[in-house]
Structures are given as structure tokens and as C-alpha cells.
Amino acid sequence: MSDYRYNRTALVYLLPIALLVISLFVGRYQTPMSAVVDESVKMFSSLLFGTPASVSTQHTVLFNIRLPRILAALLVGAALSTAGVSFQGIFRNPLVSPYILGVGAGAGFGACLAILLWDNYLLIQLMAFAFGLLAMFIAISMGKASKGAGTLVFVLSGIIVGSIFTALTSLVKYVADPYDELPAIVFWLMGSLATVRYGDLLYILFPMFIGTVVLFFLRWRINILSLGDEEAKALGMDVEKVRLIIIICATLITSAAVSISGVIGWVGLVVPHISRMIVGPNYSRLLPMSIVIGASFMLLVDDLSRTVAATEIPLGILTSLVGAPLFAYLIRRGRMGWN
Amino acid sequence: MELMLEVESLAFSYGNGPVFENVSFSLKKGAVMCILGPNGAGKSTLIKCIAGILKPAAGSVRILGEDTASLGVRGIARRIGYVPQQNEVVFPFTVLDFVIMGRAPHLSMFASPGEEDMEIARESLAVVGLSDLAERPVASLSGGQSQMVLIARALVQKPSLLLLDEPTSHLDFGNQILVLETVQRLASLGMSIVMNTHMPDHAFLVGSRAAALTGGRLVAVGEVETVVTSKMMSSVYGVNVAVREIEDMKRKVCLPLRG
Image (cartoon, rainbow over all chains, first blue to last red; front, side):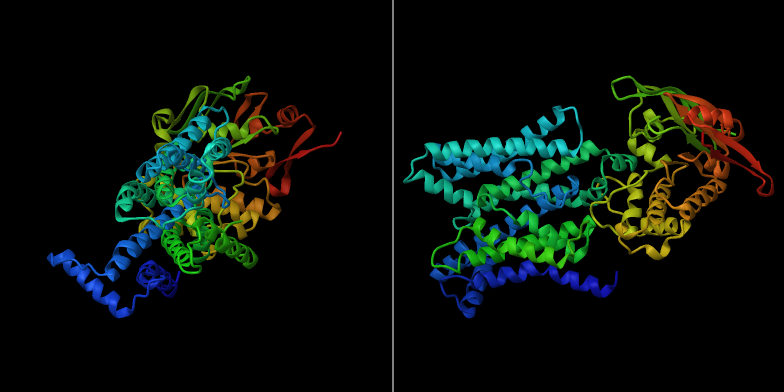
């Protein structure tokens, strides 16, 4: 590979940072360049030297409303893409999404149940996270208990677990109060980052960090797992163990993401493909690229969601409206990065 | 000389009766063993048992005196290179990316291959004569080239024993010979090789030893000349088989006869 191509690829890694800065300006409330610079200086000096923090409206908009939301979008996008690309590798299927093991359906049910029972913001997150993990554990135990080994059994178990939780979610919707709880449930399921605060980021940072770091260091092994169980074993891999670690990590970060954003589709499916087109199928380069592209894609879509219309457009709707045509375009180009 | 491979009373079962049992043979360094037998006799299963991919029901496999049961998958993969019959890559890895995966048993779990591993991969590609194709996607290669890439990946493992499962089965005449020549070259460099083949005649071309697996047992094992005989091959494959000496080629051939 030529140095030129390396350099070009390296530029993509700056994309999320550039978008972060740009996104600070984006929104209904006008923030001129001078105000952003001014408030940033004040912000840093208050963080570093303990000077009194700014109390202006601009400060609130920039650093208490926009910035946490921007950071959340970056994190959620990176998480869903990392999980998606990892699952695609170990399940040897480029059409796999992070929700393959029923994680999305489980988390959705957990959140809906919390809305129905308590309507407490923190509990909704917690329940979404817990039920996402629960769905994965049920799927894995079913997969392990069945006689036929291999990845197909896991996929089937995921479908079973997913459909059960989807049905339970429908049940919750059915019994929910149609004027109050039902809209909240529907809105949550469509996905949004509108209400994210710094505190929420704190909760998800730890599981996301752990999961992503482990996946990052295991990324070359995903190449080998994508060859199939027998060949991976012949190459000295403890297939069952490594696959389980990857599944748990990918689920951990997916559940963390879903718990603050709701179930956002397409990102975890489309981003790995875009990344494959840029750096090829080798996970050594593909996984880091998916993190960067995923973070950038999610942030762009979130910027759209808070600017194109007078009211917020739920993220799940936009990711599909943007992601699906993009996917169709990629298929037409025919350079999918898989056979 | 110490034996490279010792297979002793090996048996395997999928749960409904044994696929094979009581399989014993041994192999010296630099020797090529051809395993013959009809479809479904369990040749591939036997290879996979030796490679540690399948767990035998009974018996033992020793490599340089060490029991593979105590080596673990990683330890086995450092000593035994397995070349599958055909592989189906879902993602279009380049030849180099694919071949370097053979370094897996030598790297720690969280490591990625480095310059040194890259060098070993390039050397192995040179051994099978595919240096020029390093950046090509594996899926774009011909059948013969794919087989060579699989062999190169096994060589990257730096094994002392190579297991090949029907390496010539999907190849045309020319590529079959190319693969067999590579096998012979590796053996002359000291590699011990066990290979399954559909063609008993291949045993004459490369084998120093042969074994016939049928009905779940090794019915013959030894020098190629003593195993690949008209009588033995006729009974193994259930058709009339002729083994003849070709005078001007100074070698024996094995051919099926009609009727």
C-alpha cells in the first residue's frame, strides 16, 4: 500500500474532530464564530485555572446542550458501528447488524417497561441496558444448549429472543396509557439524543470503553474467525472462547449506546460497509475505521435531526432515510468489500 | 531416526457408530503419506482428527513424541499445518492478509502481526511461487492459486507436519501436477506430509508411503508399492483397477478398468 493512500486514510481520522467543531455551530439558536471562540476560551480557563464559569445563554447552549449531545452522537455512532462490524466478522455475514442477538429488542422492552412502571429517566436507561444484556445471555445460552454448534445457531437464537421481546414490547404498548405513556414509548423506540446530559455520558462511558478496547485489541483475530470455525481452530484459535468474548463486548457497547439513544437502526449495518470500501476487509484497519466513520455518520445525522425541521426528527427515522438510500447507492457501485 | 508423527489406535465417532477405529500409522521426517479410500470413508475426518480440529473418541496422535491432546489447539497449530480442501472466504482479504493469518498460533491473543510476520508471509508466498499476487484478493484467484495460497498459509505456521485434505480435487491436470510438485519440494526440504487423495496414482507420483482407509479401518499401510496394488485398489474402490509398470517412464501407474 502506498504512502499516499495511508495519508489519505489518516485524514479520515480527523473527520470526527472536525465535525465536532462544526456541529457546535449547528442549531436553531444562532452562535456566531466569535461567541464560540469566546465561550470556549472562558470554558477552558474555568476548567484549567478555576476562573468563574460563564453563565451566558451562549455558554448554556454550546456546552450544556450541544456539546453533550455531540459527544453522545459520536459515542453512540462509534459503538453501534464497532459492534456491527465485529458481529459481521464473527457471524461471517456482511448483512448482520448489532441487534442480531436480540439486543435491540431486549433493550427496547426494558426501556418500555420502565416507562410504563416508573417513568424515571435513569431507570429507563438502566432497564434498557440490563435487558439488552439479558437478551444476549438468553440467546447465547440457547445457542450453547443446542446440539448443533457454530454461528448459525446463535443467529437463530437471536431471532427467537428478538421476536419474544418484540412481542412483549407490543404488549407493554397495548396496556400503556395512550395519552401519556404510549407516546413516550413510541418516541423512545424511534431513538433520540435530544435529552442527553453529561451525567448520561458518564454511565455509558465505562462499558463502552471496556468493550471497545477489548474489541480493538482482538480485531486481528476477527479476521481469523471470519474464516469459519474449523480453519480458525486449525490456526490455533480457541474459537468458542474468543467468539464469546467478542459477543459479550459487542453487546456491552450496543446496550450502552441503546440505553441513552433508543434503538437506532442502519448505522451498525451501513458504516462497516462504507469503511470496507475505504480500507478493505482486514479488521486491523477496518475496525478503527468503522469507529471513526460511525462516529462521524451519527453526528451528521444528529445534526440533521435537530436542524432540518422546526421540531426534532427522531434519529431512528433519519438514519434509515439517510442510510438506506446510501446503502442502495453502494450496492449499485458494486464495491461492497465482500463476496 | 525419531518419528515425526505417530497415530495410534485412533477412532472417531459422530455419535452413531464409528467413522473409523483402530487407525495406526507413523511417519518419518520428510516422508509423504498418501491416504487413499472411497468417498465417505472418513479420510477428511481422519485428517481433522490429526489436526486437532475434531476430538478423537479414542487413541492418540503424537508429534515428535508429544501427545497432541496435551498440546492444546495453539500448540498443535505451531507444529501441524492444516490445508483444507477448499475454503470459502466471505470477505475479500488480499493474499498477504490471508496468508499472514498463519501467524496466529505464534502471536499473543491481543497482538496483530508485525514486520517480522509480514516477512515470513512473503517468504512463504515465494516458496509456492505466488509473490506477485500478494495484493490480489483471494477470491479472484484460480483454483490452483487458491490451493497454493492455502499451502502458503500453513507454511507460515512454521509446522513440522503438513496435512493436506484432497489438495488436487478441484484442479485441472496441470495444476494437479503443480501442487504435487510443491508437495514433493516441501518434503525434500524436510517437511513431513500427510495428504488425502482421490487418485491412487498420485501416491506413485509423490508418496513415499500410502495407506488405504475403507469401511472404517486402515486396510493397508506401508510403502506405496505394497499398498497401491491391483488387488488392494480393486477391493478398496469396488472396481477393477490395474497397476502397471511403464517401462520408458520408469514408474508405475494406477488406472481404473471398465467391466
